[in-house]
Figure 1 (cartoon, rainbow, N blue to C red):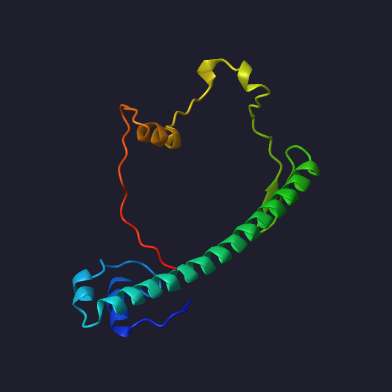
Figure 2 (tube, one colour):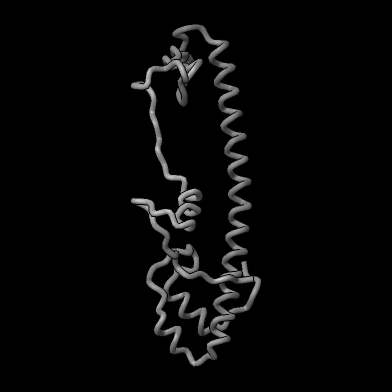
Length: 162
C-alpha cells in the first residue's frame, strides 16, 4: 500500500536490506550509505517518516484482513464441531462407515476432570502463578521506596510520526 512517494535513492537503500515481495529483512539497513546520500537531512527524515506511514497503512490493511480470516476460521471450526456433534449423537457405539476416501467411526469420549469449587481443592493440586505488579512497583519506586529486585530505567528513545 502506497500513500506517499518516497525518494528513489532512499528506497534503493531500503530495498537492499529488505525483500520487497516478502517483506523479509535480508540484511541490516546500511545506515552509512543512507547517511552519505546527497540529500538534505530534513528530506531524508521526512521520506523515512513517509515510508513508515506507508508501512503502517499496509500493516493496518493486513491486520484487517487477518481479523476477517480469524472470523472465517472460527466459523469453520464451529461448523466442523456442529457436524461432529451431530454424527456422535446419531451413531451407535463402535459403528464405522468407510469408502475409498474416508472412514467415519464413533469413539468413546475421553475422561475429563471438572472442578466445581476451586477453593475446596487441596493446595498440592493447584498451580500458583506469581508475577510482579509493575504499575505499583513503579509508583513505589518513584515515591522513594527502595525495593530489592526492581529498579527504574529508561527504554530506547522513540520516534513519533503523525
